[in-house]
Structure formats: structure tokens, C-alpha cells
Image 1 (cartoon, rainbow, N blue to C red):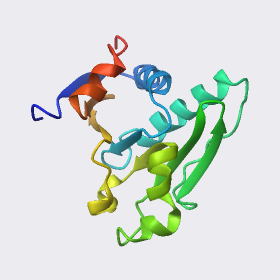
Image 2 (cartoon, rainbow, N blue to C red):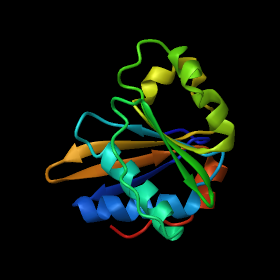
Image 3 (cartoon, one colour):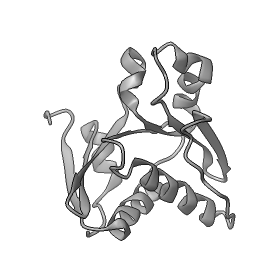
Image 4 (cartoon, one colour):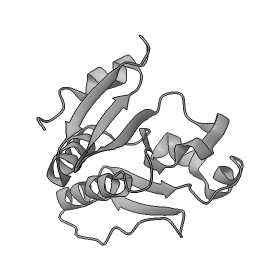
Length: 160
């Protein structure tokens, strides 16, 4: 954590707490926002992204299956609030592969949820928010970092 990238840390004791954070983020993020989801396999990155997407779709009165993009690399969802791009970059071997996916353009126009963001390298948007999920017993710890102004605009996180 630095002064220009402060952190919000939340202990999430169960999946319901993770889902509450996902819904909070869904209500406060939109086109041009990039959420980098970090953590080991099984930390809850896909669960959080799936809940966020389903919350936004439900707000539009839509129900849709939200599969992991592990094999497709990117899944795109159209919502009334704009497109949501959910990307899993685990299988990418070079940051330039991101350009072939069109993610660099989506960073400006869509809400982008990026799993395994270390694969972005120098293409990581400087304004991105980073949510690091760390397993802790039955739950996890979530640490959200980003530019001070952007974190402030999110308001208070939900109680966990």
C-alpha cells in the first residue's frame, strides 16, 4: 500500500460475504473500470466475478449462465450499464496476446474483470483497481487497492 494506492481490507468468512462484496462492486463499477483479480487457484476470483456479473444481469431482469472463461479466455456480457468483459489470462504466455483478445480497447469502453492480471505485464491499466483474495481457513481476506480518488468514490464496503 502506498499513499497514492491505499487499501481496503476485508475479512470474508464465507461465500455469502464474498458475494456481498461482489454485489457492492457491481453497483459501483462501470464502463472504463478495470478490476484485477489476484490470488491463488481456488481463492474465489471466479466466484466473485460470477456473482458481480449475475448481479448486473439481474438488475436488467436477465438471468444468464456465467461460466469460467478459463478455456474461452474472454466472456462478454451485455448489460444496460454497458459491456462486462470477464477474462482469465492464466493460459496466456505473453502480454502481447492481450492485444489479440481486444482487451486493450475494452479497458476504455467496458467494465473489465481480469483474472491472472500478472499476464498483462506493461499493458496493465494504471487506473485499475486490484482485488487480492487470500484464503484464510474457511474464508478469505480481500484487499482492494487502487488510486485514492477511485477507492473513495466506491464508498464504504458492505459489512462482512
